[in-house]
Image: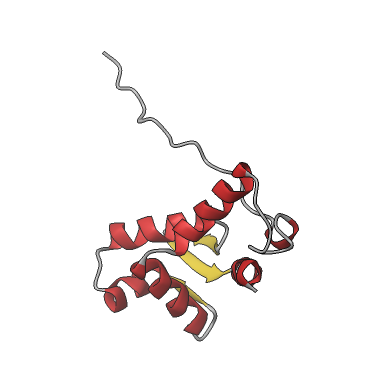
Length: 119
């Protein structure tokens, strides 16, 4: 009997930022836009993910290897990798594979898009 792949969650399209909701939250949003925005906000609505964003923004080179992020967070490497994947899937981080390690950096434009929604 062949093993079946786990069901994948339906992924929402990434917001393109202020173009999707140029008035921020000052006018009603249609349901698809609200769902997409909620997905982006959900990606940052976790203490560990907020810490990761802050650590990466404060890194000397503007990037860090996953191996450098586990100790400051006090979390295991698989847990940190999961949080980094969530942030990457939301378009908030860039991931660059170097040998066996993955290096992450913040996409400042995406952070600006979140800020613009509440401006």
